Length: 288
Image (cartoon, rainbow, N blue to C red; front, side, top):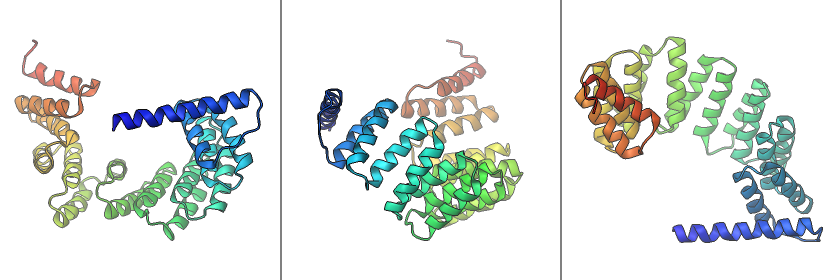
């Protein structure tokens, strides 16, 4: 697998080098659209956006009706913070490929950046009528409402996302964030319990119920929820680290250390996990 990846990477690098030589020598040349997409992606991945823009402009001069190249052009413009021109490129791509979920989402995201929340919500709601990717579209609508500071409507669409896909971690996080700001965390417990009743083995539902209890300072309930999550999936690192935090709050420092060590084992070193472990060792008066 690693050897195959290395081979493909080397092939793309050779293609990019060949492209640059031909541009530098001002030669006439032609690549198919797929090859151009690989070249432009290489520039984007390596943050060489000006070179990427030149490449995509040449590509579009040869493949005027490629929505994929227009999307790549928009992505470069977004990286360069040229949002108005990015929107124009995306709208052209949308006219060529009016059912592409990714284009709907990107247009919505750019409109949010430009402060056109109404336009973002309108285009994304239009996508709901034709898209099979309804969880992500609902989530993006929720983000538009959240950016508009309409947290009530944002919560509605985050809930719709979760009802379709209980494993949508971003929607679960954003929903909890909105409910906390709205002061509705306690009222949301029954919402997560509904998912658990439907699927008692959903580690994500148990984890997010635990997060709610943690925010509400109901630490014993939080511990129980995180323990269920880790019992279902022993490699759920976030559940182990949050379990450790709940144990800290109940002064069960030995169990806290154990949970943090498990999270370290699963995810590897990070400043956050070392800070949490340091806290547990401090309370245990273990300064070694």
